[in-house]
Length: 264
Image 1 (cartoon, rainbow, N blue to C red):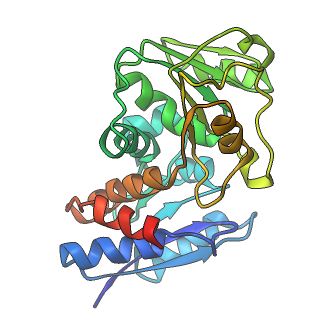
Image 2 (image 1 turned 45 degrees about the vertical axis):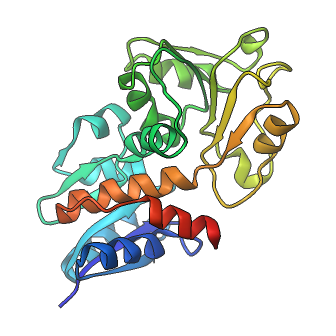
């Protein structure tokens, strides 16, 4: 009988995770069944327990439940502890991990050919998405990581856990230059863009939007400024592959799956 996994969030119907994990399972000859669970905003813990009791083996956790998932796990990885958020739950042993950071780094380095070592990085936002990737960016050897957020105190709280990173508001970015600007805010989901001063996006930088599947105002602004611009579909696939490895002990190839999604 197929072992059961799912992505859980609210909303979740748009998720490409079932398609991705089905492709991984076919390629690696793993017998799994992967679905979607839309949990009530006030019923995440109950939904997880119901899934576990019904035989579910694992969950991918998406917005807005990653912080709550962290609190439900008996054990967490170091990268989940640093992020204070979990996006991958293995239910048999109540283990939680966060694969967002390694997914981003693998997309940048492996799929896009962007070396991060010695680079100056601007990370926009200090919420769950930023918290999930900031540690991995530092581990990749960047020379400078600036985390900018509307509420500077929230960015400062994040950098307090991250020696080597600094925090500021958007206005303080005026006149600064970065090799890579990563949008980890949810602004793109509402067709908005972070309020960046003129010149932050420029022909010498690369812009990366974690939102995938839509041409966001951030991507449009980056292209208008002459920057190379990429969306987060590759990150989605790479973080899913790491989740698959945590559950199944098999690391699937990602490029064929990413190419199929891009083609579609």
